[in-house]
Image 1 (cartoon, helix red, strand yellow):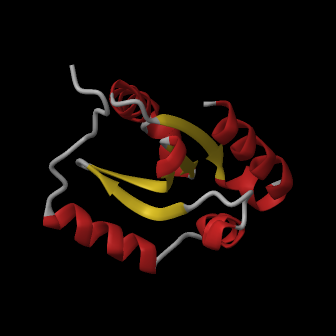
Image 2 (cartoon, one colour; image 1 turned 45 degrees about the vertical axis):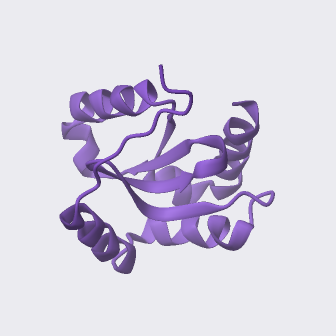
Image 3 (cartoon, rainbow, N blue to C red; image 1 turned 180 degrees about the vertical axis):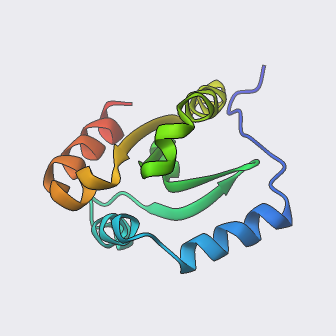
Amino acid sequence: MKRNPRIRGTIPEVEQAARHLRANLTPAERVLWEALRNKRLKGLRFRCQHPVGNFILDFYCASCKLAIELDGEIHEHQQEYDHERSEKLAEYGYRVIRFSNEEVINNLPQVLAKIEQEAFSG
């Protein structure tokens, strides 16, 4: 059994898609990224639109294997896919927490508190 399992196999197309997403953040992603970037949240280093295997995580902290996903309207129609995706990431030790775009825009302090709690509880 592997001591530190990782999802491998990110392909150039996924990396290119991540670069595109990074350059075209949604308004909610921009707000959260400003709060997370440059270790602004308790010294935690987050990556934005980070490719992992075939997935692109909205935000990712490698030191605590925490993925943060922001859900817009499209996610109302793909809840099963999102659940399966989170389960697959969990198989490799990643923890996924989700917030709606509205939560980020309307209640950023509470979102940041939840991220901090998750980051240091794992």
